[in-house]
Image (cartoon, rainbow, N blue to C red; front, side, top):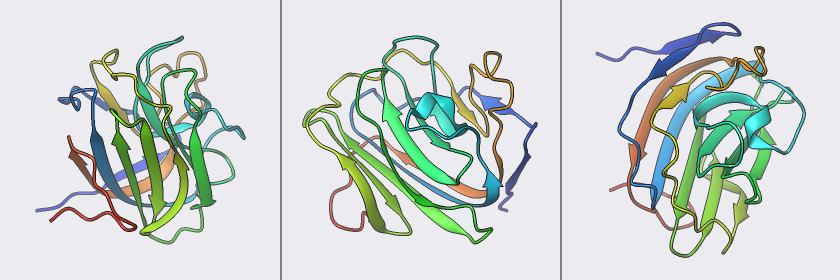
Length: 171
């Protein structure tokens, strides 16, 4: 039985999940949105949380968010360049894929199997600060109480390994 999560700008789902080791990771998220992001920025911690493990201030954390223009952003830590791209707020289903190779410092963002951005050789920090992953909002949303996502999520799949290739697929 599959269930979907529906977010309406003020529903927050937070659950303690086992985080990736802080090393390599890949996650796939199938969802749709009609523009339910927050902010207009290139800083991942200022968007509406899709799948994030944010700690206030400079920390070894990460987040995948949507801004108010429907742009998808991913980042790790406070000083690492963020990757972003693609407007995904047209109410059509889409799949986001983020994959990270910690030892090489590489991060890639895909939307519907097409690479939209990458960050090479700079994201080598271990992501050990967070203890929970928040879905549908930013965990530190007390500072920005409107950072809730308006979207439907069908599936979230996480792996503790880096998936390579032009169109990453887990076999």
